Amino acid sequence: MSIKCLDLENYKAFARRAEFKIRPITLFYGYNSAGKSAALRFLKILADSTDGTSFAPINLGSDAIRGSNFQSILSKYNSSQRLEFGLAFEHFEVNFTVFEVREKNSQIIQRLEINAFENSKSIVLDWNPYGLPLENALSSYAFFDDQEKIFDEEITFDGLVPLKYSERLAPFLAPLAHELRKFSRNFVSLAPDCTVPGRFHTETTPARKISYRGDGVVSRLQSADDDVIADISNWYQKATGYLFVRSEITIGNQSGHRFTLHPNADLNIDVDIIDTGEGMGQVLPVVSLLTLAQHNVLGSNPVISLEHPELHIHPDAHAHLADLFCRVISENENCSILVETHSENLLLGLQLAVARGEVSPNDIAIHWVRGTEMGAVVEVIELDEGARPIKDNWPIDVYRKNSKIAREIFETRKKIER
Image (cartoon, rainbow, N blue to C red; front, top):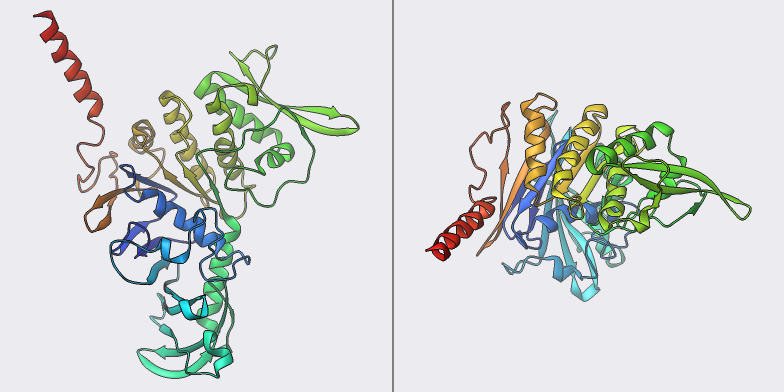
């Protein structure tokens, strides 16, 4: 993945700076309303703010913002009016400070800091509304090099992407623009409740973009190679006992496809996905995107963000999702998978893969997001070769409720028997 690290400050639950390591498989755990959803959705906001459709640095039309205004995405744990976030790429890191100028009803990038790793060069661009004529005030910046002011510059942005700037800033701003555009092109995220495929679909051109609700997945499956469909079917069979089949059909004078599931791998019994249990349909976009990425047909550097992909399927199938994650990153080293989840079985499946040597522990980063009186804090949990937390820092009480309830049942039975 092009982004190696994400920092958030004064965003939603994150009043203080929180650092997230981005690996081929990146997990977000935590109790309800701790902040893990907000962290994962910031990447969706970032993609929507760098795809050429945003009229402001932060695209308030993003699905991930859910109709909020700029003030609503700021943390309620302090009084700062500035959103700050940092991104680390392979060759440089960048920090943004975004501010809303209320009298102009406009957001601006108040500060932009870029630090290059190879030559240790750095620049700072500070918004300076008095550096240029009034009509250019929103695009006026003071340029600093090694903390010494050099000159005033006019810089325009397309969302968060530097768009127009001088040649002397090109060595810094051109690579940033390139990486942000690339991230936006390759990013796809799925909500926990996706659109279930209908009974049949007329043939259409494969969608260029897959929506937050999974719209566009079916068009990709219609044109997918047979081996993609076969791998999706293999996953369904292992995880649920059903086969997944794509059939060509004719609707009037149009060609199209039907997508069915076959219980007990019996091809004589076919059930439209819309007529099966909710989990069977809801997991299809998840498995489809991952399998398309596995076969290198989802972009050059696919970044797949999944909110509770296990939500609608039986816990026994969670480990099969873990197996699929591992297979995808093993066969497509340019793919990154980011997952918000509560699933213990999903985590155990990944740990088993590490212990077996099927994936490297360096390919996995687990984040435990915890709410405090001062806002959310994040602890990064990394695994050793035996799939144990290196710092022994996994919260010990996370998955002990089952055993506590079982003990209470046992003790209650003993009291009744007396």
